[in-house]
Length: 137
Image 1 (cartoon, helix red, strand yellow):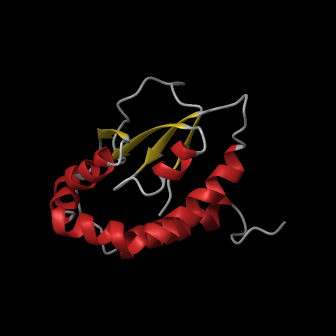
Image 2 (cartoon, helix red, strand yellow):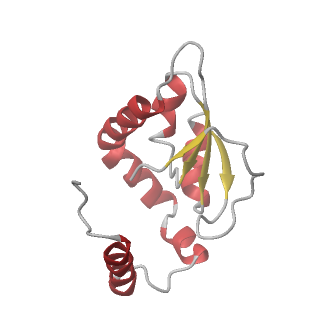
Image 3 (cartoon, one colour):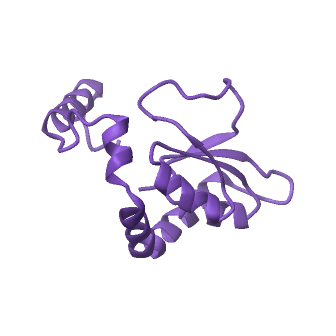
């Protein structure tokens, strides 16, 4: 069937193992927010502009944007908005969500609507508001 994991139990085991060994274990929203200060937000944006644009282009292919369908998308973990901008340029309406204030400041300067929220908690939006969600990293 082409899947990497043979069954749901194997996938769940792999995810649990990854979480246990993750360098982010124990990190909370405040520590992530503190990590992405103005200096790191700027460097991240400069270094990853091209790769993020390429990944966002693939998202556009999957979303099937056309003259009739212009979706409202949630960009989960939008960071500085590198993946939101190409989506907006092609006609999508995008709301970016991230935990880092500095990353969101950068995204807002680029003209992206943003909300500060922790993706590991309940999202601050009503159910069914968005046509879809992307998370490019």
